[in-house]
Image 1 (cartoon, rainbow, N blue to C red):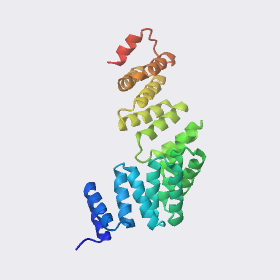
Image 2 (cartoon, rainbow, N blue to C red):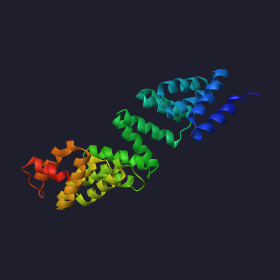
Image 3 (cartoon, one colour):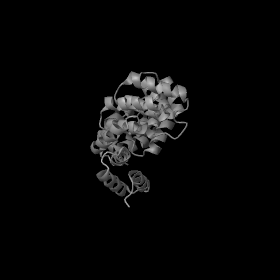
Image 4 (cartoon, helix red, strand yellow):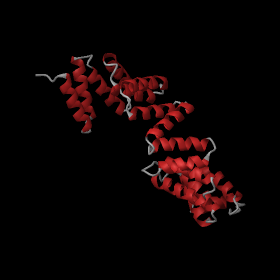
Length: 269
C-alpha cells in the first residue's frame, strides 16, 4: 500500500533531519506526482530546496502551498525568507506581516527587523529593533544592530553601550569589530584593542581588525606590538599597506619610514 501524503511528509522530514536531503526531495516529488496540490508536500519541498540555495523552484513550491493554505504562518515565514534571499523585500515584508497577523511570534518580528534592515529601510528597521529590545531587553542581535546604527549616526557612547550588551553572549567577529570602532572613537584605546583582538580571534582573516588593533596599540605607545598587528594586517591584505604607512607616520607615537620598501620588508617578516 502506498504511503499517504502525511506519511511521506514524515518520512521526508526524518530523512532531511538525518542529513539525507536527496532522499527527502525524492519522497516529496513522489508524493506530488500522485497528489500535485498537497500543501504539506509543497511546503516541505520548498524548505528542502531553499536549504540548498535553489530559491527559484523553492519559491514556486511555497506559492503552491500558500495557494491552498494561505493562513499558515510557518509557510508565510518560509516564503518571506525565500523572497528576501532573492532580493524581493516588498514581497518578504508582506509575507511577514501576514504571518504576524496569523500568529505574532517573536521569531517573526525578528525576521521582519532583519528584512527591513537588508532592504535599506533604516528608520523602519531601527523602530523594529527598538521594539524588540523593549520587549526583550537582552536580545543581543537587536542590541548589535542598534549599536551599529548609533555608531554610523556619530553617537559612539550609545553605540558602545549597546554593543557591550550585544557581546555579553556569544557574538560574531563583526559585532566585536563594531565595539572596537565605538571604543576607538571614544579614545578608549585599551578597550578598543581588546575588542579588536576578540574579533581577530573569532575571525583570523579579519584584516581590518588587525589594522585597527595596530592603530590602537600605537596610540597607547606599544609600538612593537603595533608593528606585529600591522604585519598581520599586511600579510592578510597587502592592499592595506597605504593605511598602515599613514598610521605609522601620522600618529604621535608613530615611526617615520622614508623608504617604502624597507617598511614592506619590516611588515613582511
